[in-house]
Amino acid sequence: MKKITRDIAIDSGWSQIGESRAVVAEVLASGDLQDATAMALSELLENAVKYGESVEGMPQASYTLAVDDALIQVSVRNGVTRAENLDNLRARIAAMNAAPDKGALYVERLQEILDD
Image 1: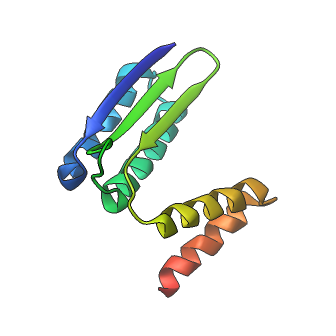
Image 2 (image 1 turned 180 degrees about the vertical axis):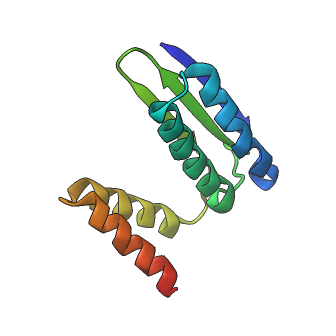
């Protein structure tokens, strides 16, 4: 399994989000799989930069991209100081896991964002 891990500064990580696409291109051949992986990683990193916080033990956000013949794994880590934010994230993950129609859940979330 090929594994790449990078740290990004939360306060200035925007440029590194674009650079993450180049990291994906190093690991995956071009095509739909590369595009989907780059998009997923970019979205997760954008959230880490927007909502992550520098905390003791996690002063920067980081991501890991691991690829082998049967698996692509993308993980992003960032600090958080408010338990409410973590609880909200856990609730959204539980809702995604339980949703029979993930597309409808996505559209519902987009509507919530537009309404705010």
